[in-house]
Length: 279
View (cartoon, one colour):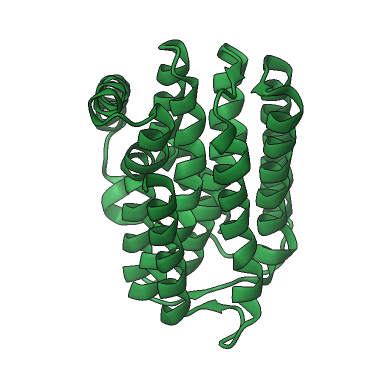
């Protein structure tokens, strides 16, 4: 769960970070904010729904004691910043980063202090990989993310103009799904391998990172204005709504589990969200 909330989440949120930064620099704030909101909704409705359909996810008690409340706190704080100032400014961006650092520090320290923790076994094949090869992979992946994000933002703006829809609609649907593919891949693979805690932790961690790290870094570089009223009145409400739904789902039979039928419910919620936004 800790690895899913930290290492895996940061890696799978890299596309959202680069796309949002690129969009802000290209003066497309609706894409920057819409990408994060849409990705958070997709992580729960689309990715978590599909993952639960493949293999039911067990919910750890810490999920509701710590991780879910932290996700809701950051979501509520984001809504407050957007509602009061009609933008996410540099001070708020820095605050997000400070709060994220404090959360990660507490999470790791708390995990190390837990009795009975046994370090996971490391795949022997991974131990044989040289640092040089790892460095090459990082460089190739970084370049792919950078140029891919630039092409994605430019393509999204052009597509929105040709379809006659706003950048927000494209960002919260197509771009959000595109940048959520790493979360989907990581969660599905984890579910197939039986690492259900890693799968759930990855998704909750990604949502926290999307708000605190992606918007925090983006706003620190360049303040993000909120130009669309639908972002506050509709998109943010749906994002917080689907996150809130996880609470009762965890206590409906079978308790402390996201069973297949619950996965179908989350997936149906996401399809309804796409219909509301697009039509």
